Length: 182
Image 1 (tube, one colour):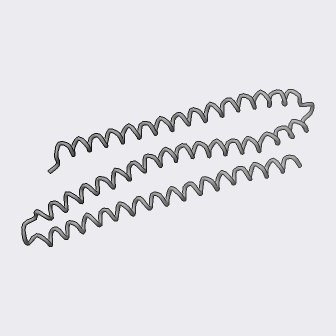
Image 2 (image 1 turned 45 degrees about the horizontal axis):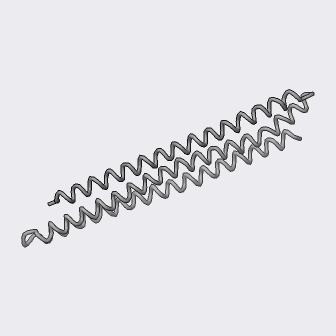
Image 3 (image 1 turned 60 degrees about the horizontal axis):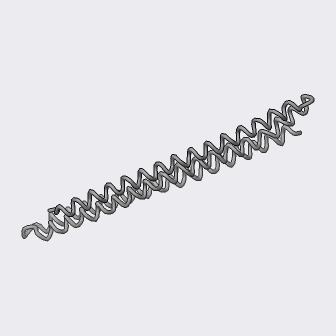
């Protein structure tokens, strides 16, 4: 049986976790806003420079060379922006994942304490039923751990794929730029 103090402590921990996660979510939003403001300022500055360069072009050959010189940096900047965006999203998601894992571990610990307490107070002859129940709880915990490991592996694979695609896009832009200069 839970005491009033245990219930209050549990509620307090839940509220603290909620406020912590809310703070992390706002930090993620702040980082996104800052990234977008920085990218927007840079884009405005580059647009002004590009417009002046286009107005100074004297012939079609020079225009093609200018276009080729702008393409690669644009691809690199887009890849960098995407990487920053991914880092912010995955960092915020990781904080939520850590909180979930901590809450799950704490809930498992409390549940096992209740099971152990119930087993101590179980009537004689119920040892087999208690052992089966404990085995089922352990199997459930193992299944949860397996799912968490699978999610972590999938996340690692997704990040590796993201990095590979970004790298290929930048390399393709370099190749295209090199081809157009010739």
